[in-house]
Every structure is written in structure tokens, then in C-alpha cells.
Image 1 (spheres, rainbow, N blue to C red):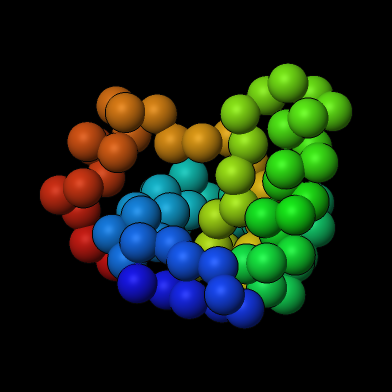
Image 2: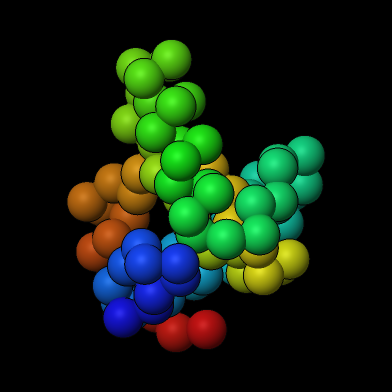
Length: 87
């Protein structure tokens, strides 16, 4: 379990995000995105953006910059696809 400032992210979800980031590439998952330095600040920003846009967004760890970004939630299909992959 990844714990940052009291917030928790399951290890498997954390790893899935890193694997997905590596797969999709830096251009889509890191470039031109805000680099939040903690899960806590990214989660707060994500909640505000979700309310503002009505899109289902979440914080995710970045494979490239090692910070946190905001993006759409992984779909069930993506979770299944990336679950048998490794970094």
C-alpha cells in the first residue's frame, strides 16, 4: 500500500498506473501536465476537477517524472490488459 500524507493507494493500482504510463508514453501521461508533488495535492485537485467537469478523474503516479498527475480513471479493460504486464 502506498501511503502519502495519510492518503492510500493500493500497491496493485499504483503499479498498474506506472505500467500504463510506460505503455502510453511520456507525451500522453506526463508532458504538459501539472506535476503534483504528493498524492494528497493531486487528489484534492482531482476532486475539484471532477466536480467542475463531471468527468471521473483520479490522481496517478507518473512513470517518467515520479510525481503525480490527474487523468481519467483506468477502464476495466485497461486494468485487465495491464494486470499481467510488468515494469
